[in-house]
Image 1: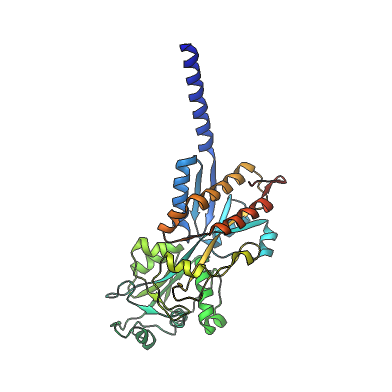
Image 2 (image 1 turned 135 degrees about the horizontal axis):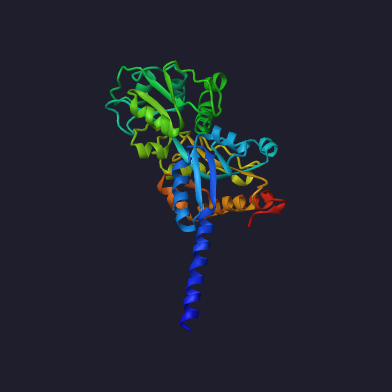
Length: 350
């Protein structure tokens, strides 16, 4: 009996090790937007602890994520700039949002602290147009009558890579400035008109440039401002109010989104929404998955990771100031997986 018991223990041990080894051998490779990198890295770390499945995510910008997905060098891509339905069909992709978040104007001006500087949309657009090029410009001073603003030239910091954050930011500028819309427009990459401007790669690159360069202004996803302790400006919203950037003010803007009426790929713009508490620049970030996975195990692993993230990663998302997708939207997303994502003609979900 002792020999039989010992044999069973040994067999079970080998089975457990084999199962663990098999789980750990599964890895997912992905690349794209820097906007959601803080939460994706948190989800990936926790999910690896629980399942043994590893996510290798390269935060190279939305443009890079789209390019690598088109080239099929990753298991999924990520972009803050949603693709159009016809482009998704052409490439053979399925697109779905994961979280929503806010983009902030951040600055580095000696003597000015977080939330002490106020800006509105037209003024911010004119700074990026190069029409306002000094901090003590009358337009900025009018919005900040109690601040002593320096007579220093403004250095404008922007993204140097293809960026969904830039897409959301420039889409907002188009909404608040007809001149910006006519002269520059929106996109993942635009021709920046301000003469005194510099670029940074990724949200972290813009944050780094703003921290390093005095009298500069840039735009980053909130988590990067929070983690890098960079002062941010309050931005006037559509209701004429100056809400604090937070999960609550991002959620107030996101509450206006009707995802059930979104086109194929769930592409919705959430910039410049009404409401006293709505932060003005808010957007969703998206995953680009393949309609047909050559390797069913990889496709299933991708969907299981995001299913877990939707159901168990909400508190982590909120802690990093992202707005989780509502439960009813998650149901719409996972229904689309069941209909659209396959391997060798067989559905991969559920």
